[in-house]
Each structure stands twice: as C-alpha cells, then as structure tokens.
Amino acid sequence: MDLLKTNIKILYKKYLVPSLSAAVVTSVYSFVDMIAIGQGIGPDGAAALSIATPIFGIISFFGILCGVGGSVYLGKARGENSPEKSNAYFTASAGVMLLLTVLAHIFFNIFSTQIYTFFGASEVLMPFVEEYTNWIIWTMPISIISSYLSCVIRSDGAPNRVMTAVVIGGIINIFGDWFLVFPMKLGMTGAALATIVGTVVQFIVLCSYFFSKKCQLKAVKPFRLFKACRNILRAGFSAGVIDIAFIVLTVILNKQILKYGGEAALAIFGMVITCSSMFQHLFTGVGLAIQPIVSTNFGAGQIERIREIDKLSSATALIMGFIFSAVGLLFPLQLTTLFINTTPEIIELAPMIIRIYFLSFFPMGLNIQATYYLQSIMKTKWSAILALLRGLIFSGILVYLLPIFWGLNGVWWAMSITEFAVSVITIICLKKTDKQ
Image 1: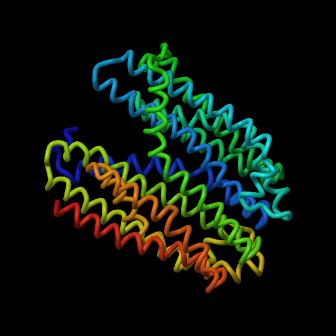
Image 2 (image 1 turned 90 degrees about the vertical axis):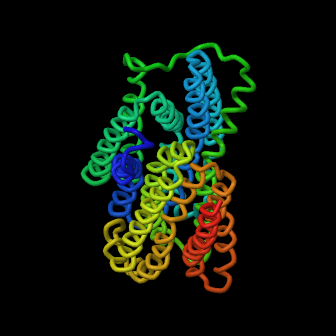
C-alpha cells in the first residue's frame, strides 16, 4: 500500500484496526488478573495487585530498553543494505538484555520484601503481595526476554508471529485465571501461575520464529561493542520514558491512597488503574497507527495529507476518550462489581473515585495521540516534554499537593486536572507546529 498516494481515510483504517486489536490483546493479562483476583480473593487481593503493578512496568522497561534500542539500529543498518551490521546490533542488544536481566533478577530476589514495602505494601497486604509477586519475580527473565523478542521479531518483518504469541498466551491466561482461582481455589498463587504459564507459552512461540525460514536474525560477533551498546541504551531509554514515569507515579499513588484512604480505596484504585492501563494501550494504538503514515508523508513534504491524518486521529482519540469517560460516569457501581467482590465500604467509596478519575480519560487520548504525532514530524523534544508533564511532573506534584486540602479526593482530582492542563499545552503545541 502506497503511503503517499492511497486515500488517507482508507490508509488510516488499514493501520488503525490491527493496531487497536494488538492493544486490546496486550492489555488482556492485567485486565483478566484483576477481575479474577478481585472476585476470587476480594478487595485485599485487588489492592495487592495494585502494589505489584510497578513490577510489570519494570519488566516492560527492560524489554523495551534493549528491544526498541536494538531494533532502531537493526532497521537502520538494513536500510543501508548492511545485514552483517544489522545482526551485529541484534547480537549486541541481546547481550545487553541478558546482562540486565540477570542483574535485575538477582536484585529483586534479594530485596523483594524491601521493594514491596517501597511500592506501598502494608502489613495487612504484604502476605497477598508476596504470594502473587514472588512467582512473577521468579520468572522475570522469561518475561523480559519475551518483551525483548516481541520488539526485534516485529522489526524483522514478522508482526503476525508476535500477535500469535500474545493471543495464545492471553487465551491460556484467561482460562488459567478462571480454573486456578475458582475451581482449584489457589487464590493469588493461582492468578500468578496463570500469568506465568501464559508468558512461558508466549516465550516458546516467539522463540520458534528463529527456526523459521523467514528469520533473518543471526548471532554474529559485534564490532565496536561499547559504542553499539551505548547507542542501543540511548535509543531504547527514550522509548521507555513513559514506562519509567508510570512506575514512579504508581508507587506515589499507592502510598498516597493508603495514607488518605486505606486498603479499600487502594482496592478500587487497583481496578481503576487496570482500566487506565487498557485505555492507554488503546490510545497508544491510535498513535502507532499514524506514526508510519505521518513520518513518510512528512519526509515527502505532503503537508495537507499530514493535516488530514492528524484531524482523523485526533477525532478518534477524542471520541474514544468521551466513551471511556462516559462509562465511568454512568456505570461506576457496575464497573466495580465486575472487578471486585464488593463490601459496603467499597460500594460507598467507588462511585466518587471512579467518576472523578474517569474524567481524565477524555483529554488523555488527545495528549497521547499528540505525543506520537509530534514525534513523527521530528518534534521529539516537544513530544518528550508532553509525555513527562502528563506522566510524572504535573501529576506527581498534584498528587502530593491536592490531598493536603481535599484529602483522598485530591488524589483522584490530581489525575484529571493533569490531563486537562496538559491538553491545553498540547493544543498550543499543535497550533504552533501547524503554523511552522
């Protein structure tokens, strides 16, 4: 399909549908885990899963750090018609990934209790957190390698293999959550085992790609190893900024919620952050759909086509954000009962929390779409600034400041105010870019 000549609306649809489908599958693990734990174990289990959420962010960060960093230079070398250089970068990125994986695995096994406490685990929640997260940490290397392989295999021209691996792993995880948590009554251990088995199967499917005839990835002797590793880490870190911000912000939120609201409020937040993660994946799907179209047309100077795709994707993001916000505003109790085995305290707290927090999803889509759009037209500094403002700076300051005056509600309002404030800056950036 010609990115420079095909009708923009047709082109956008061709890229958007698979991108959103991939986003839905990507978010299925945490979504299903939260429902199974919330219904099968109760509010304490849901709160414990919220404590464990940063662990998954750290796993994702290490995989993206090496996977995206390696893929950037791998693809660049192939564009230069240099397969040997391409495979040298693949080998170097794999080596860096394995080294970081070993170090992370050792560190998390030695200091697991201290890490859980830092992430916000109280004495009441610690047994639930340990029962679930110890299993996740034990299999951390497989999870990091799977995240890494997804990046490099996609870069090698096999996105369908990655999709197949994620779908099969997701189906196994769904069945495992139901079977191990409910009929087998294994509690948090059952939910963890379901996630682990799904990840292992995903890992096996990804590894099978190296035995296919289409695979062009080969291990060769890296050259200029230090420079190659530095380039990989530099390129990968910029792609992982959002994950780092999400990890830090989740830790801050966990602690503030426990301080001002206790375990019940944290259980509700566990459900809310699961929804937020899924919605952000969908918004990211919109950004990923337009990125190759915008970048290609920008290089060709096709300004009007860029404006058209920007309008289409902005409208998509705003419509999605409106729908997501409306669900929380209209059906807060129904959402809560879907995820959590409710108590009177949960029923009393949930509607206000959900309604305030879900307001943030309306502008969130535009903010994320703009981040990818600006990146695609080489406004990388503006893109990074928007990502940091919404992901850590504004949100982090307000999460500490507003509860002083508004108590627990200040935590939820911090997120909505952040998204609306950043959307104003986003619109200013987009108008300035359009004039340029």
